[in-house]
Amino acid sequence: MAFVICEPCVDVKDTACVEVCPVDCIYEYEGLNQLYIHPTECIDCAACEPECPVEAIFPLEDVPGKWQSYIAINADILDTHPASTAVGRSDGDAPAPDAAQPMAASAPASTLDSADIAALRQLLRDLGDKKTTSDDALEEILPLLEKLGVTVTSA
Image (cartoon, rainbow, N blue to C red; front, side):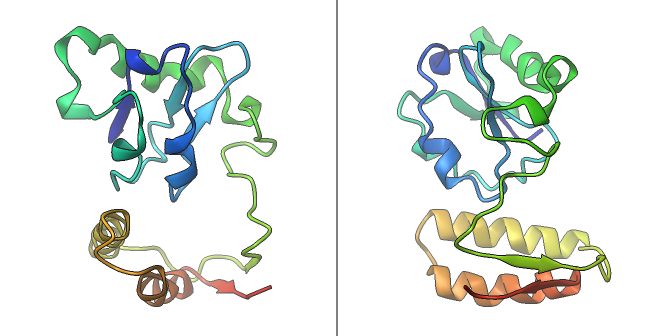
């Protein structure tokens, strides 16, 4: 798990972080009083951290001592609340599809290696920090998607 949502989110649940998450790994559940970062879906891109208006999101290694219990709260959430029961989710861990960017996928041709993943993380950080444009980022991401056997079509 790369990032953890802590106490300042309790009873706030501002979704600015959800809107910028490139992998849709931030979940909201009916009846619970905060948002949660999926412990294995987070790619450590840090896009969510600066967007949180109450400064509730921390890298795992930087969670303040007084909020250490939130590490387990975020990590254990799926034991009691499956991703499929999260608000706006209906098919397991898969994020809701984005109608503006239809994608057709076949079986993956291969997997991404650690260098590909590191490059993708850096690209997402650069995009979040506005060090690159979305068009330039897309040109770098498309070959990675093709490596996975994903075909991207425009609407």
